[in-house]
Every structure is written in structure tokens, then in C-alpha cells.
Length: 141
Image (cartoon, rainbow, N blue to C red; front, side):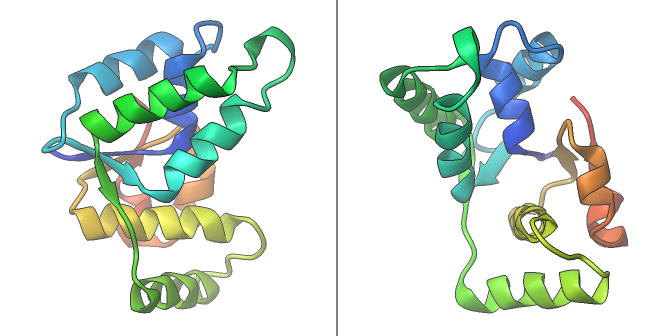
């Protein structure tokens, strides 16, 4: 079984006060490059989110970079070529996806490319809109 990690799970892994912290940490700790993956773009999303969290939850850039190193060591990083980007966008359009949900469609395409059997996210509804091939793999840690 191979799990694809959405940014929402990785953010919860870092933030001890996050309501889903313990379940996210358990999933992340159990993963390795053969059993876990995320999109290369997730590194940028993770950095942006962690360094702009409100108040005391905000992570300084050096700490965020250390966690990115850990993600890169533990998970396979998946990226799309231009043909795969267009495929994901075209499929999303056929499923009625509009606006920012296109970014979840790109992540879903990365999960499919990696052969993930499940997509771990705390934003289940976002991924369930992306058609049956992706929706059937979505769940929480």
C-alpha cells in the first residue's frame, strides 16, 4: 500500500496544537520512500503555510526548511511534466472543477502517477470532487 500525503496532513504533522496532529504524525512516521509520497509542489505549499500560520503557530523559516528536509528524506517526491499537467487540467474541467480546486487536481494526478493506493488528506471533500479514480482513494490518516 502506498500513501500520498496532502499538504494538510503534513502541516498537522508539524503543528503540535493541530487537532489532527497525533494521527498525522503516526502516518508520517510509518511512511518511507516505498510506502509514502507527496507532490514536489507540496514542499512549496508546506513552506508557505508553515511560515504564515497565525500567532504562536507560525514556524520560522529555518524550522520549516528542516521539516522539508525530513519530508524529502522520508517520502518519494512526484512531479508532473507538461503533458500530465494538461491531462489533470482537462480531466478536472470535465468534472466541473473551478478555481483553486485545480491545485488539488494536480496533486491527485501526482498520486495517480506515483501509484498511490490512498490519498491522505484532512480536506477530503476537495479531492472527492475530482472524479471517481481519485475520489476512491481519498481518506484521512
